[in-house]
Image 1: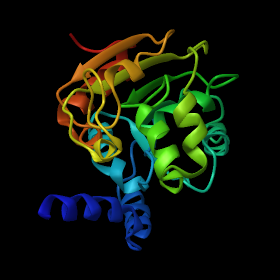
Image 2: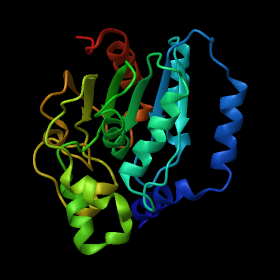
Image 3: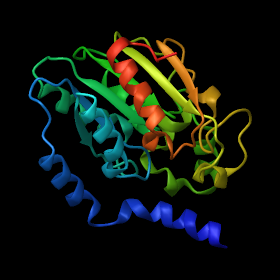
Length: 236
């Protein structure tokens, strides 16, 4: 009973009314260097932007200028979110803009840069780029839980053919809300299997000992994100 209560509490966190204003205040308080390269961070399904705040702080400490972009993961499509990201990227006038997306946010990142896009690199964290079995099961038994993101989560992408270098970090600690939809085969992070993250055409792939929810909070993951943004490959 206690475990179920904790899971439901985690699911309720995105609904806290103070989360958005608190995030906006934090971003105003910590202004990066004007010459720092911008990094747009995108959260996953059910979440709000504050889920990426710790990763943003670590990127800022590494010399980048992080920007957390929020979007409605249930009530809008990932394609609509991708257009919002493209508009944000255009604000930088053609200079390099990196993207880091967790889970659904990684899919949104690739959709936003599959055509003409400014230079930069993209890192996807625990993103079901090849389609999600957890989402497929939820679409049968509880479709409101995946909302208008369901079709893209289920289908994923066929391959990455864009010009930007894309790195993918997967987790292999099987703890997460995705287990409520049923057991996953093979190595997985509790929500997404490692196999679902191996999209043809990406530049590099890495598996870390982290759960799905834990990836954006992992210090090791943050160091690897910085390595890829800097060098186009993960550190060995």
